[in-house]
Length: 424
Ligand SMILES: Cc1cc2nc3c(=O)[nH]c(=O)nc-3n(C[C@H](O)[C@H](O)[C@H](O)COP(=O)(O)OP(=O)(O)OC[C@H]3O[C@@H](n4cnc5c(N)ncnc54)[C@H](O)[C@@H]3O)c2cc1C
Image (cartoon, rainbow, N blue to C red; front, side, top):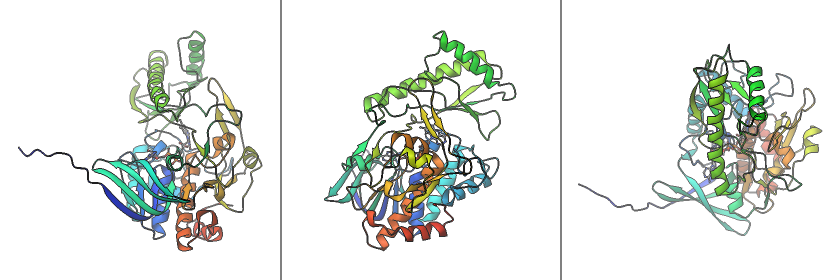
């Protein structure tokens, strides 16, 4: 026998740019930074990339074209990812919205590794060291011990703005009237559905009856289901976990239990009552509950409802968004406001820059914004493009030796142009 005892192998590593969180936003930030020649590390708590798009089973991509057109406004690395997905059979047509999340994992592995960015999987960032206006390092728990990562620039792409929060960046949460964030959702997929026989209208009518009779506990008003590229596989974004705070560990835990309970309730209801669902088989539940909204940081600019609805184009725009204002209520219903046809707005760089630090960007769903504006730009194509721009901005700020708030935006635009991105 050759028993060993655990000896933590704590390490300190140094990078130009450290990206925390390997969702589509963080992945693109790391790829963009690495392609600009920066020594980059991407830290992800799971053993794969994609965040909500993979672990969260979120599908399909919401609009990445100018409203009601086929003109793509979310391009660059996001467009490259779509092309690679199509080539591998992960989408059915090149400009497709529904995708296979397992093939996405493989595409993202390839894109990150080809870029030269380093990855730390199974790395949970748990702490940050700051000095004055500078983030000095982050600490990640790993299987072999603590890894301290020092970097010139940090990009927080954790969705929940964990790094920023640990560093003491002020944030808001919920709406302007003191109301909560949008409710959470546990997504799931059913296989062996006879799609030709599945009548959504009939299913919804019976669902409403069951709800009225108190036989369904899910507060959501209807069943929201999407087809996937694989035949007879259906995706459900249809649970609604209300009244739980995503930033409270106990409540987020409770939300996971409630989410899966609602999955079982809906699955059982469909299988028992709905034509085409007789052989339906529960093949996937999201690895973690889907959080639509949590922290939104205090940034140099707070994107607001008026910016969204007036389709404002900012001088320091870094990516575009054409998606609706889309707020899910805690109980039934929600608020949906569409942008005018052919329109979109842009996301200003300043909304990614926390007031309080010189070398930190926050990218993804937690940028400086109102509750209402966030309900629009939070979608995957937009957070993916935001990530690419954040990686470029961090790289430019190193080259020009400037604070993040003083990043030369003309230079960022030049590189976005080179990468085929749209931002104005
Ligand atoms: C239920 C639901 C339905 C949605 N529906 C749609 C839809 O139909 N279409 C659409 O386009 N968008 C939809 N969205 C929005 C979209 O999925 C997300 O807003 C978007 O994916 C956010 O991307 P992100 O990269 O910023 O964050 P995420 O995808 O959340 O990525 C964050 C990453 O950081 C990692 N991480 C977090 N904390 C740490 C830590 N401390 N250390 C290390 N790693 C960490 C996570 O594991 C994750 O991989 C939906 C969202 C939800 C929740």
